[in-house]
Length: 285
Ligand SMILES: C[S@@+](CC[C@H](N)C(=O)[O-])C[C@H]1O[C@@H](n2cnc3c(N)ncnc32)[C@H](O)[C@@H]1O
Image (cartoon, rainbow, N blue to C red; front, side, top):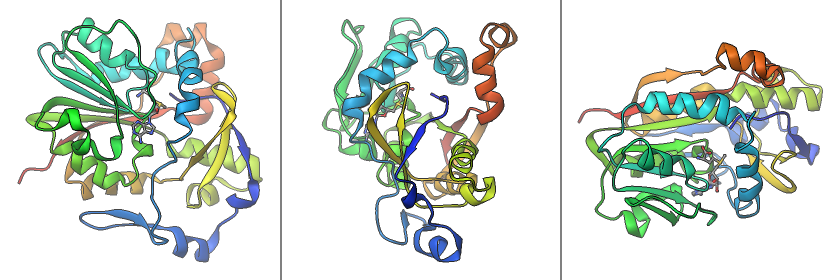
């Protein structure tokens, strides 16, 4: 979900800039991994989600949430007809989206996996919701030997410890003509936010690489999230390194009636752009 501005903490950590900082933290991609030169995980910290889960779902279910107005409709459209298809939703939140795909879309034998155990009750037959780490889906016990027609990483991919490994593992669970639907927030959004907070420029923040922490006022102000900045090239190189090609990319926006009804949300999109959706398929061979 794209969200209104966040409140940042510990500004002193955020000023790793210039050539030295770039040398220290810049991501490099090889054919089978992607790590910082400091050797640490490249993922955003996911531990706080056990405390954030209920606040996130409350915000997401609001009538004017960008997830309801823009993101889920666009995700649903790119997924297309899922009748008779199996879906694996990695980082599924409370599982509501994959439950809808089964209940209303006719998906079968589907699974939602999330690190936080905050799942909807009353799930439809044919859907399992399990606690697990999306960093290596092939190691989640109930997924052993399974294959899926669609694998979703909806605003969850950033939490993978090693993004290339996570996509490699997901790829092994795809059917021959299956695809991965992956969404991420436009990286420029975070750069704009940090540039405003730090009194710096868009370019400085877009190309900065040190982790930064913030609290999300709409979810739970008590919980601090830590994120790692990424650029568009970081993201595209991750897909290539994982052996995936991009069939379609979408940058969804609000439809006209919603723009008129929720001008405050249009203002958020005007400023922060929104999210990116990628339909990814395995490279042949
Ligand atoms: C921004 S929410 C997105 C939820 C849902 N996919 C959606 O589109 O509404 C991120 C989700 O990723 C989950 N998550 C974070 N780290 C994870 C991990 N390492 N393994 C599995 N799920 C994780 C969180 O618990 C949270 O539900």
